[in-house]
Image 1: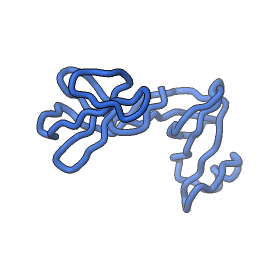
Image 2: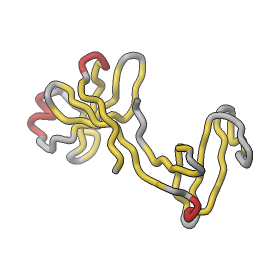
Image 3: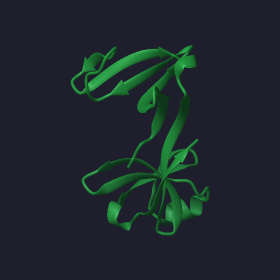
Image 4: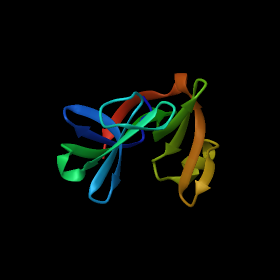
Length: 121
């Protein structure tokens, strides 16, 4: 449950997606009618944007050490998280890395992360 990116609903199915001007690029992991293989396990179909029922950005939010985060990725029982609380003293006290000005990230043990929820932005 670490989706972070665009999704589109097209013909009653949800796909990973990427807006591209007047079109939307739809991706899936298996071959399908109208989909072209772009690499092993990745298939693409480009459809007009006006044929897409919904296009939205999805993120996963969570709580770690009683602070708000978004999940950027996962690896081997750890979650890559980004602090969204907006208080740099808290981020520094937690030992988070300053990824950019005002952006703090770190690795959290997945077992310590609570309140995982998907947000559609």
